[in-house]
Amino acid sequence: MNAPAKKLGTVGMLWRLLPRKSRLAMPVLMLMVLLGTFIEALGIGLVIPVMTTISKGGTGSSSSILQPIFDALGIRSVSTMVGASVLLLGAAFLVKNVYMLGLGWRQARFSNAVSQYLASTLFKSFLRRTVYVSLAAKFI
Image 1 (cartoon, rainbow, N blue to C red):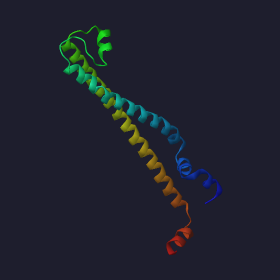
Image 2: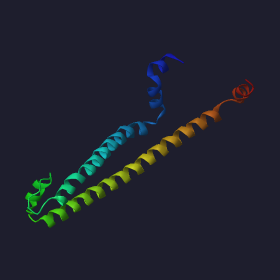
Image 3: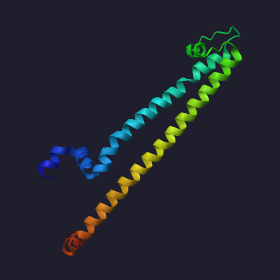
Image 4: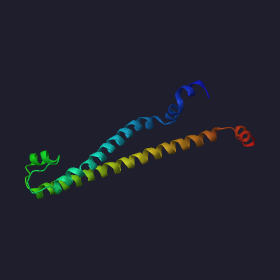
């Protein structure tokens, strides 16, 4: 191994194998995954306030975290609160799933592009080798 390769380390050598376009796309993809994780946690976190709203008594005021939203919208009846909270939960899951679908598509596209690039680069390097190198490797 030469000195620059030792200096880079394994991750650095792998990073240099990627084309420039993929190196620029990877941090964006990582940020999109982090955003997807946040949206997933937010969607799961909405279940408890919705369940609190559904299971509360008929007092007209909810002890859930959604109460400021109900107050801002002027919602006072329990049935309207339940309906609004279920619609909010459904909308959150719809937005999350559409985003995660797009993220999965983008990840698959990125992975496929990198795989194709690396396979074609490896194949081209084999084609450019001389016959003598290939024959010598075969008999060693």
